[in-house]
Image (tube, rainbow, N blue to C red; front, top):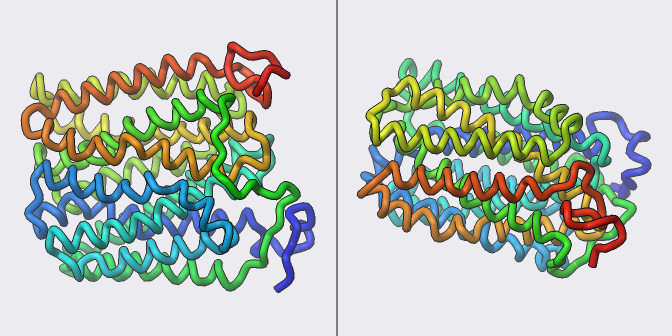
Amino acid sequence: MAPVRISDIHMLPVWRRPLTMLFLMSAAMPLCFEVWFALLNNYVIEVGKFDGSDIGLLHTIREIPGFLSFAVVFILLIVREQILLGISLLLLGVSTAVTAFFPSLGGILMVTFVSSVGFHYYETVKQSLQLQWISKDRAPVMLGWMVSVGAASSILAYVAIILTWKSLNLTYMQVYLISGGITAAIAAFCLIAYPRFITDTPQRQQLVLRKRYWLYYALIFMSGARRQIFLVFAGFMMVEKFGFKVDELTWLLLITLTLNMILGPILGKIVQIFGERNTLTFEYIGLTCVFLAYGGLYYFGWGVVLAAALYIIDNIFFALALALKTYFQKIADPADIAPTAAVAFTINHIAAVALPVVLGLLWLTSPAAVFGLAAAMALISLMLSLLIPRHPQQGRETIFQSVGTAG
């Protein structure tokens, strides 16, 4: 089918426009990834017999493709961004579907690595296309709505798990096959049904590292390190320390996602009204308090209700990270968006590759110390966020610059 310029998409029916495709993919990805995440801790403990060091190793393996996200720039020399987006989502769906066919430690690590390639390359290209296809004035709200759509999709999957896990005596294999298969089918549809969308600004096809983006790079690095501690150890804590079963942990995730579905558009509007600096400052203050409280669960012996509440609050705070995307969109040269998205994902995963194994060993000695380290990272992020101007733009990337001084 003939290519369509972004400036001409109004001539297409709504269902064939790029924004619709992004929303559809935003709904498809969580159908397998969030289900995989919801079952992961129970699956690896019950089937794989994992301990804290094993789960740390798994997440290190899972983050290696994220660290290699810069390779997207070279793949884009031979594959268009839009096609790579669909292929990556397809790979994620298929690899999730076959997860339970490989129950050993080696098998779980192998399938996790393959699915991670699909996930991280999908996320890298999706972020690039979001910032290219959505105008700056609409981006915060539209990104908030995509958070909401992704949460709604996850809710649908979690409700299905809650209603059928015990009543139908489902197995891990059945759930992985269904969730991964649906995502793969949607990815295939997007590859076939949508025309090629062309932007007005061609993307640079080489790695881009610019001094004037240093604050964005620093915030992305800290975000990856801090986020990794939550992804690896918060859910593991709920199972290991508090004995959460599959349906119980799914209920917790369901509550979290319901709130994200409701709050997603509101959070986008908050970024639009209050700006990236104020939004990120609020997020990092909140995350510091949450991680300190996580540590208190072990040090002071606080109970399961507080642990569940902190888990929910933690997820909501992380949704505010969309402000990092809109901050970069405002300061970036439009031709830098695709290569910088790839570089940013690599920077985001530098700490993520090393931290899980190291902190997995620390977890065996002091879980509270793991969360204390996360709180320190949130404080560093807070200090960095204060360097963002109230109205960032090209030439005014930090409070130290005036327009026209960028290099």
